[in-house]
Length: 257
Image (cartoon, rainbow, N blue to C red; front, side):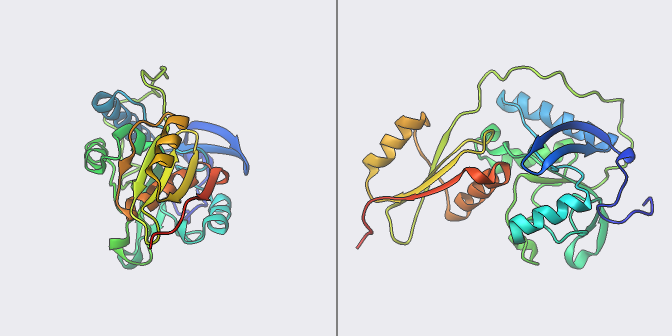
């Protein structure tokens, strides 16, 4: 469609949903009218269900021009698509399925909003018109698990009615730090404290539950949430995508016998 290649679409084809500046310089959230409608619908559904507000990840997290695609590939390796093949670039090379027209959106705080309930998150994504879960190891081709990465498979479809960006209101509950723990080969606990909005991520391994309680009190997390090792890794990756420089790994205690 349009005769443009992946990542080479002109900005005039899009609506600027939001913009800002990060370590790479200025960025924009560029979307089509159809995708804008779906984003606003998804935010409505999320707030109705959880009373918390979804946020698109900072950076080029909607349409992604070829320049930022190269930057992200160099930084994240297999965590980002090869330049000119990304689902953020409109013309997506979807493995053996070939090329398809789509527009991906990254929602970095979906876990905080939905309490890491992936079923509820995916249900609302589908209801809003997005396809969630398409970036997952089960699809082969080295895909990672990215529950925050949702795709509009019909970005140029005319929305059912005119849409406007919703007026921002203060959340009834501010983003908070959350502690997670999972199993580890050498230690009783592998733990992390994260904040979906700020990108904070602190990680450690330990045998002493008292240390975990101390960290929970220090960061105001409340009880730790038990997750699978794969989900722990996905949570870590989502925070790294928000603010990579915040990652911190700390090892304390003694190894298990």
